[in-house]
Length: 639
Image (cartoon, rainbow, N blue to C red):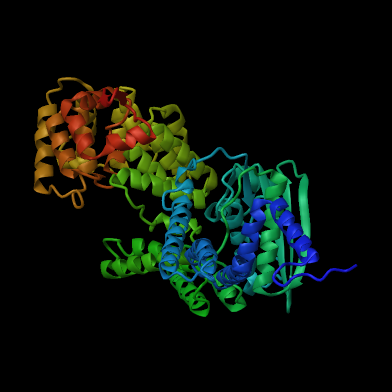
């Protein structure tokens, strides 16, 4: 018999359903309830939508940045905001269905706090100024030296020379980004000395291990480029022929392909900084190639024409970073020429230098890895009180961007010599010399660094090589080396050589014969020493402005060598300031030479006071001790 259920009591079926639901609920993992609530309040949906939309927007922004040459900081900040915005979107989605006003306000406060913490973490975890790049070794041993010989103009028409020259220069620039490759730079590969030599002989003359040859042919709307990599035995290690439409994009793709294959075959182990600041505008690219070819002649009138073409290139494409950098370099060279005391124009020199700064800043805004721009204008690092440390970080950061920039390496070597790190300076100058072996300045300045390090046996042949190439007379290195060796006859011969090459102004100023001067410098207690000291003091007191006194370098050196330490310290104290010394004064002085007279100056208590005034100890504790000084517990001593 079927029973009716009383009103107000659940039926057995409904009861069984409730029991089953309760059993299901108790059997379900605890996390499932949280997931249900997240889904109910649309938190997971909001997170998924936020990631999808923000990621897509970020990808579009990065693409626009690459194509339009926008500063890298834009995408960096966009990424930071994307990360910080994620917890904000998720937590605010949780507000759905919350009725309590205080709870809503508290949740908003929590969201803002978490987003702020996320933003701070992305900021503090980033590389920042003086970050990883500044800690990279500035000069690494090269696994190979490569010479990219000038590409042949396959058209035969000189009107297309700019294309072959531009292709060559861009390949050199791309390969030069690899810190474990030494790459011969353009001034040496275009040296007249190489003109009559066969390719392998050219590479051997450039001290290269490998050579790259190529040919560029322009055919109406197409371009064909052939390239090969060979060793000095003539074996072809790689070769390829590329053909495509004549467009900026295709030319860049060919250069990227060739440089990538060469670096792969040579086995480069270190990643190269990104090569950026290029253009998709064919007209801008052609103007740039034509301009850089004219600037490369280093003929003043032709350089003026080249600068005009480079200006047109950046007007055509204002985001063409490489053109801005090349323009800045040309403006800087011309500014130097305008400083000539006879034919110069100091007003225009100042204007050109200011324009160069603007061009370099523009280049770095577009592409922060254009190392050439760092030669003059390097972004300052925050939180640095010591100028020497600041400069060191800037040089290292710059060389991380462009490890084969010979000019940058040369300036870095003088920075190191200025701080007494002579062996490190030799290393930097050696790399510069490998990259520009046919520029007379390079062997001469390598000889100078070697002489400072007491390595005259290596310095003297390089000084002779530089003179043979048309550089400064070798006697400028022969004199200090004769003095280091205490060789009176050699020093007298060197001093006579100074007069014969127009470097005899110290003898004229002191009214002394070179032979007498040499004897007074080397012989302790020589009767001419007090006379020399009095005349040098008078020369200094006539004009104690280090920017205008042409005698400052040799007065400090001579005063040190003849033992007039009072005069030496008086001058050094004048040119020292809390952030170092007057630019490169110490790099030319005998302060950190491994020589007896220099040691006598360093042992004087005034030397430690002077060095502390210049802020050098802090730099030395961080980067190493110089010739003649060492740490002594928490202090240091010089000897």
